Image (cartoon, rainbow, N blue to C red; front, top):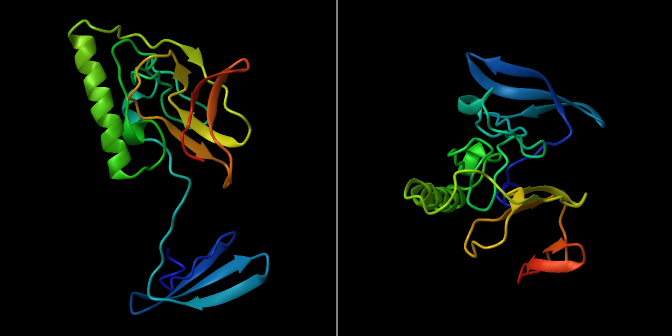
Length: 179
């Protein structure tokens, strides 16, 4: 979208210098595999590999997922910390506010069920083992049931004309209706 709007995107580059004039940015000097170049500009935007906001749970009883760096959860949004539920940008890097709201709504419903004594506060289920093509999958634990829950899968690269399925052995226990 940025490129379509005429915004220059530079990947695989290293910022060598920011040139200013009277406190205003006027250019960026970049190093890339193609050499050094000066890019006249009025501003710079930096992005990075967004990480989950887990400072509040660091060092506690909540197990973190090596793929997302956020807590491992089951379909009820339960972490390994009894009675601790997680959603949104605590689970994974930056997502849209709509997606985080969906996860938050589900986690809130599950926490309310836990407080009413309807479900356990202990995470359970079998740990998913995503294929090498998958960057991450949340939740990381599958316990069946809970037909309506947020399931987030991030692929490492674009995948065309393939569907997503969760299998136990060769038996598909869930599959995506979309390709």
